[in-house]
Length: 110
Image (cartoon, rainbow, N blue to C red; front, side):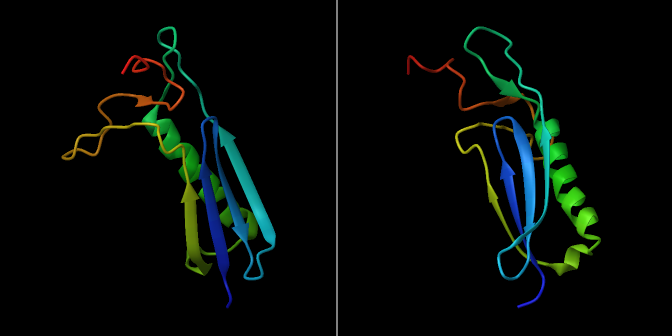
């Protein structure tokens, strides 16, 4: 097997990408933090566009670090915040509200 494996970790406070060689050795990594918003006590939100942009940035960064073309990536996997909620308009693809982060407590009574 030749090529690279990309792991994407879109976490609660940052996005990270790691490129592994075909033997599983880490070759390049990139990480970019993003802002947390607390509009009310117990509320935690993220800007959906910032999540996307930081994820895209770190993926591009490891490809540039390795000076490789994207077609050399033979597989990719992603882990994310799971319970964070995001709703977007199906027609425009635009988010209709900030992402509600898994730490948010506004529905705790339910």
